[in-house]
Length: 131
Image (cartoon, rainbow, N blue to C red):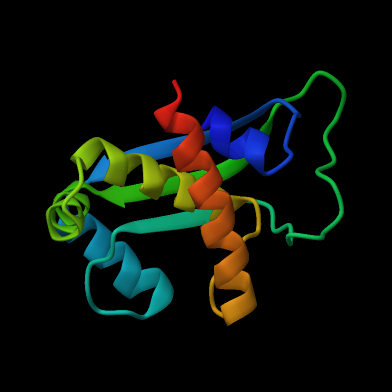
């Protein structure tokens, strides 16, 4: 998470919730909050909307900003890792990064948004390899 925040240019003290769940839980969240009746790999619920070029986070002195919640489907992550022929740890790292970027206002609905988000994710995964 620290690498994701650093690569996104966030240096303020922040916190977020990270939940590793089953397909049923993620499916229910996806259906209830996104009207998509299937499981997915990661869902992010931002508490404060901020676009990629949006205004900076505002917080009282000595406070920590709570970005929101990231929920990952472990079974879906495992399936995707197998499909992509890489380790589950790499897939989980990618999904955490992806979810945190959503909390920071990144999106992938439009091609240029997706390209920018993939670029940041690639930098994060490359940095993880060097640790």
